[in-house]
Every structure is written in C-alpha cells, then in structure tokens.
Image (cartoon, rainbow, N blue to C red; front, side, top):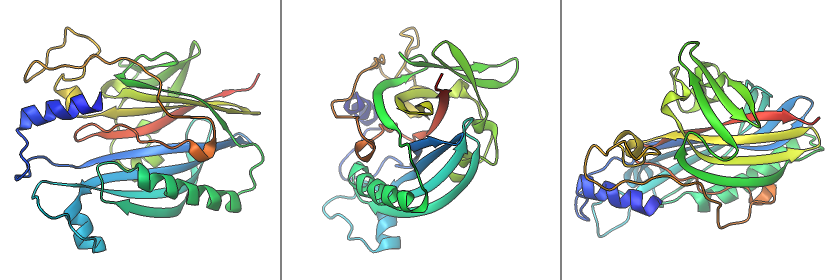
Length: 279
C-alpha cells in the first residue's frame, strides 16, 4: 500500500532524480507500554522526526550521499521513560536515549534504541508484571477498525475511542500539558481530522491496553486514500481504498514489539491508548 502512495505522490509532484521537489518534514510520537502496575501505565515513548540529510551533515557531520541532488531522508529519534495514569495523563517522563539515521526508514535505528531504553527502564524501575503483546493490525487510515472506532462529538467537542462496546473519553489531545502537546504539537485539536493506522493490544495481570496510532497526511487530505469511494481525488484518478490487514512479522514479545509505522507525506502521527481493567 505504501509503495502505491509513493507512486501517487511522484505522479502529482513530478519527482526527478536530479531536482529536489518535495519537503520531507514529518513526525511521529510512538508509545511502547511495557507494564500496567499500581494503576499506572509505564511506557517507553519515542519521538521521531524526519528531515533532510543535509541537516545531518550540518549537525552531526555525517557524509552526505553523492551522485544526486534529490532530497534524502534523515531521522532523529529520542526515547523517554514515561508514567501515565490509565486515562493517559502524563505523570512523569525522563529522557533515556537518542539516535539518528540517514535512511528511507527508521527501523534499523529504532530497534537498538528501544533495546537500550528497555534495559535502562528495567534498571530505573522495579517492574513485576510486564505486558505481553497479543495482536497487531494495520487499518490503513480508517476511522473504524476490527477492534476500535474513533469518534468525535461535535456537540460536546469531545473525543472517544469505542472498544469492546464501550466509549473511552480521550482527553490528551486537548491537554496542553500532555506528552503529545509537549513533544510534537502545540495546539488543541480533535479526532475529527485523524485516522487510525495501527492497533495493538497487550495484557498483563492488571488488565489490557489497546494502543492506536492516529495520523493525518497529504494523501488523506487530497483524497488519494479514502474509505468512502464517493470521495474523489483532488488531482488524478489513482485512489486507495483502505483494507485492514495483519503484519507479516511476529508480534509476541516486548523485545520484538517495535516496527516501522507507515508515514504519509507531510505525515503527523501519534499514539493514544485505552486501558481495560481485568475483571
């Protein structure tokens, strides 16, 4: 699906190898919960920023790729040890580590960063009941997936996630003190403009946590990705109708629970979660 998205962008913007024509700016905030204990969610959070390779040349002294003037991606990653309450209100957070990589994807930098951060987190906190990953699926930018549905109530200006036939109120998007606001955004918004890309479920003895990755990007705004086929693209005729699917990699242990989250052009994405307590 992502390759088709890149093809569409190339057609619209007329990409050429010898001419930089597209801005690579994009960002994600990924949450990797590792435990639910004492009514708190303990998470390793990673902020990711995509920029252009020349930034790495100037700031970190990396050798710039030769033979082309086309913009090349450069990723900046920073990890945090964060403690939330069960409504995703941030209680405390500490920087753990950072890394960078000049590559189209960030996974080769994310994996070692997460592993180092995970070991540091275990030394900093006495955790007894780690979460166990159970399911992961990709919704390809829909608002209704197999496990969850995101809702915005315009009458009350409120955001909800419906999971297991229950509505969970989401306050963090409008909370100016939240990790979301502090790390990658600085204004109040709502779920009306966001779409679900991935859904993860993890559990331990205290309960289950469902993590949604929400995102917006150029392809959605231009109508190139649309759940409703009646929505026509602003340019061209190529269009993707999203379908939920399972990944082709294992999602069964914390040390292998990180992955490359698809990123749209000018993409902006972040994770939210809901907690279902054990009955």
